[in-house]
Image (cartoon, rainbow, N blue to C red; front, side, top):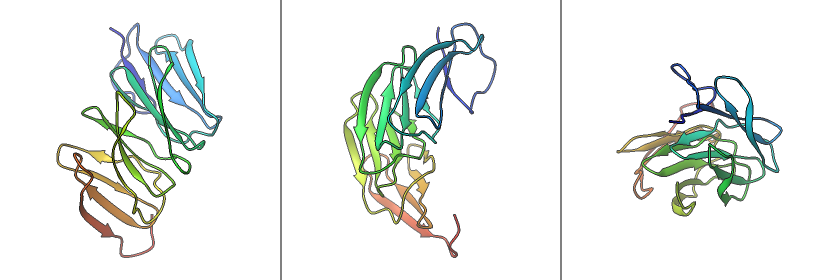
Length: 171
């Protein structure tokens, strides 16, 4: 079967049929044959990409500075859905149980259905923009913002479980 890996988090050996997916500052997302390095597909966004693609099954999710979150088919590079935000999406997504968790520079943290691209919930009271990848498990979603806060949300409904402010202005 075909396997998908998002650089730079490739672990273990690659085998024939595997595809490596990466994005660059020119706004391109690429799917390469993991064994030969041959380009299988490319997809261009209208902005720059600073995030690492998140891959789950037949879905790859990437944020762009063109204010959109993109979901592609990792085997073909075809667009599955695009989710608009008010500002750049510089942070990386995390995918857990068919939900995409991702923050943006508009101060909003979102949970999006992986298959449909529809919003599940959002938290719009972040102190500042988000450029990190959230940690997600069955009990919580944890991420920080540039407003020196660390947040914990319920993955099911986005309810704030706690907010911790760093004692100094550090990121």
